[in-house]
Image (cartoon, rainbow over all chains, first blue to last red; front, top):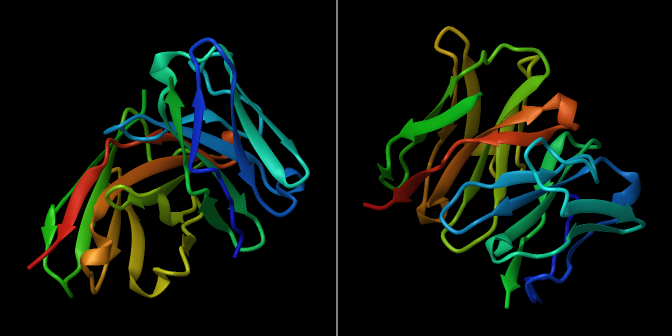
Length: 109
Length: 121
């Protein structure tokens, strides 16, 4: 089955840029990658879909990209309110199954 | 605006069947371009996909749970359901329902608030 690998944690100072990575075999050439933000005690929220698009209401500070075996969620001008867990997810067309990465805890110092 | 609300038993005994329902409001569960999914999150852990029911009616399940899971839709009640049989303590988790949006390349764009299920005797 397809595996997505995320770093357990990323730390960043307010106002700086945070990058959360998601590794998977040829992830850039497979099905679209989606990213979710989950604040403590809350349900996940879709912040990026189809590798780099944002749903309505998501700030432009959130952006996504893919290259080779890595997808990246970039959060510019990080705010304290961005502190959360972030998950990548793909729909594996070879099996019609969904796969989540293990999640990355973003800490805003 | 579409909203999802999970409901069901919060406490299930080991070996019994967990049953949850996700009520859809603010839109029709039969609207084209949308499918419906269940995801869970054990305490202190990450998200785990359980399965989904495609708008065609086909179902797809996580291989690790497939033998115990059933997802179904009740269009007359505008809701969909999850049944997980032979539960153990490892099935203790927050369970979420979510909408899969074809227009977002199968991104899950609407989520319920989640419901906590504890498996204990």
